[in-house]
Length: 573
Image 1 (cartoon, rainbow, N blue to C red):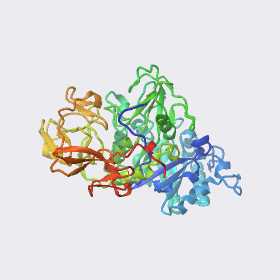
Image 2: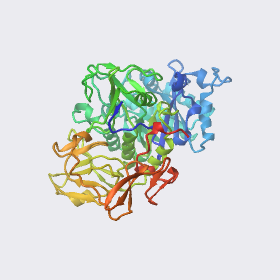
Image 3: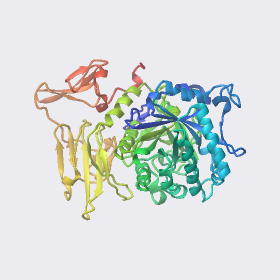
Image 4: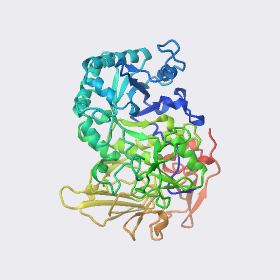
């Protein structure tokens, strides 16, 4: 298998200092073989809130209803059940008392028609609200997540926009009597947002705004595109310019939702296609059919991370690609012409960084049961915890991204570059007609921390800056580039490493013999001998400790600034 600039790891963005909301899909218990996932498999250390999906709405009684009584109810319930999934889910609080356990009602399969009928009728609303409170009380949930997909869409009516707020107003009044949380899963695409939601009505009622920043693209289209792109792709036009994470979050915030109650979605699955022609396997390639279903989720056009990760590990007929104009990876395979856009640890890192620097409350993952929970690709959850904890203690600078469709925006970012890549940020100086740009060319993958304020560089079009603590060269030029790519001076854009002449890249020099420097991999380092850096490796099982200058046990080493060993070669502990 050919792998381009990527590494597979478990995906949960662990140890988020704010909220990390974990959706659990109850039907995962029925998945075959190694894909089966039950309530008891949830690692509560990964979550601040756990959301059980889903309850439904009866169009006969207009009460909230248990969709799978056999799995979710207990033998003494009406109707009787067997597996007590609700009770076991709430009992997760015994492991982590501060965990909030929430019941979600709705979901994609519920459509919109019944919710529309309920919301426009005062008696039906009252019945739904009363039954919801009774169910929350009976089972011990901390609140209810409204997942109506979507008001005024998919069988709904234009009046849903106002009726949804009336419903939430009445729910809020009743929930406040019992101290229940009221949250909602909300559409990400601007056209749906505009049609479905009275935002100020949401603001006065909701405790959590979960923006579903995924499913922007999929096999419902006839060309390849990524499931959850952080930024727009260069050729995106029309409504597609809004179909990305940054556009969705920025738009919702512009409408007035509170940052401290907003979480953005992170998908733990990929959207997949069958290519019409395997020779045409890039972004926007013709793909008129969904991919075949995976062995566990059994959904055409989709693969859970626990399905795609083992495939990429165990086959040699797939190629993983990082497009220089895309922040997320995709892969294609020769044997079945599959093309799949998904998220890995690096792309989720960028999304978590964006969420943090927008001062959002946190992230929400869909779903915890499609992560590599066994794991079959190696045990890295402890490293993920450390990785994301370190992210939220980094320093800050002004980060200026550019949409490739020329829509520009300004963000204040926390930035600590633990990757080897060429960064370029372009922004418009609103006090002039000039665009100011910033490039970073990391020529030998050496790690660095670099801070700057773009105000210091206004109207400078060809500045070069050297960070003498790393092998890095900074140049103010064009475009935003991604992990695993380098600046190609021949094309004035980022490119794959094999296409770039790195012979003229600036390298750091040894200051004195005996001085040691960290390498790219955790178990390697450089020691200066006779004025030249000699690459060396720690003994098996040890990592270089930059704080002491010696090899050390991994537990004593900050591994967030280096590459750990290939995870499938490590033993699970």
